[in-house]
Length: 378
Image 1 (cartoon, helix red, strand yellow):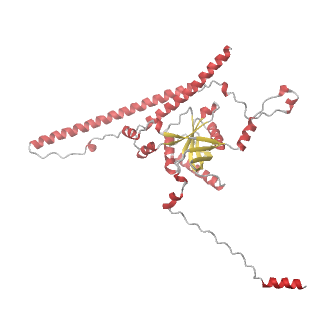
Image 2: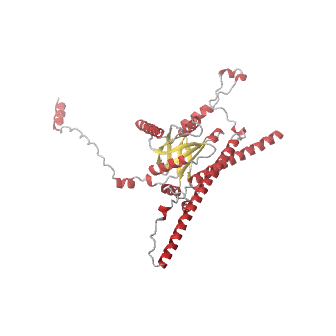
């Protein structure tokens, strides 16, 4: 009884427990615009490689297979980390037959905005880091790709990249993915909208210096590897255990016999594309030559007018008369500006890509033909 009263007396002498103070809500201050680049350390690290997720690879291959021709294109999503551009997601963009139609462009923009908002709502990567483009026989040099990549390199933090996927290589069993971006010299000329002969010489531009390739690697994970191995394993039916004659392969991915294919199915089409590109290049060079002749004629007229006016003024001064006022030659003679040679560069790049694709296909097919001939002889 005494112990109980002692404990009660000690408890009464202790101070009453105080409620824990409620932490105040943290306040955040916006980063000043002048300090944004100073704080963004990752922006100062140049991109040296691109890492492509295996799921993105499967999405691009599926889209390129379903899209008509080589019209497959879409946006790449991800982030940059320590100089590596990690592509973690992608989604296709709708294809329209007439890309110059304002209505079609607006519908594509609305679709793109809706997709990015939906990804943000589910807390997925919604940062655009570039786009992908399907191609055939190694050719991807065109005005649309250059214009799109130029916009991305101007708007995105690290400039963005374009990943090109060769559909013809995938049909032969070799998934081909390459990452590119525009060079600084080409971007400088593009911003000035000057692709004259003098500008090309000053910037040292050729068809091979329009784009620079960025090293690309594909990152896979255990789930994708196990899924592919499951598809490639053949499932043996129960009846085959008692009767071997009923044993058939039922794998989701059948075995590949691409090594036995000579790979010459695309050769005629490749030659047709080379001839077509050469014809287009010849036509473009003819147009440029005509414009240069027209410029030369107008300049000759202007020079003749200036020389005649100088002679008249000299004769008037000799006769003691006031010289005639000098007139602006550019107002009297409409000398057209020097034409752009960008289309010629793109056509040369296309011809070079078709030639390399033909060289690779023909050389591999020739070796296989000699091997097949040797086996037939034995």
